[in-house]
Image (cartoon, rainbow, N blue to C red; front, side, top):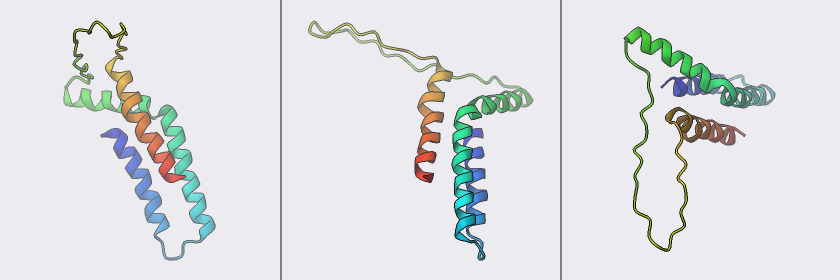
Length: 112
């Protein structure tokens, strides 16, 4: 929720500025460059800052802020399959890679 709030709050701010009646194209380009630079910097440090915010909110609500581990399905390998070790990631790292980085990359690509 915190990640989406940060992303949508900045996009909304720029969107409202771009909808102004007296908007000039050079100012609009500067705003778009600003949102792209926000996405790039947020991709680098945003997950950690969001985790700090999550810890604060969780402590205020007196709940635990944990990532649930993904259920790993083990199946029997067939005789013709190679023995490959499944890489399991810790839940927080998996969330950062599969969710946070993906969202930020899509936002950057869409903005450019």
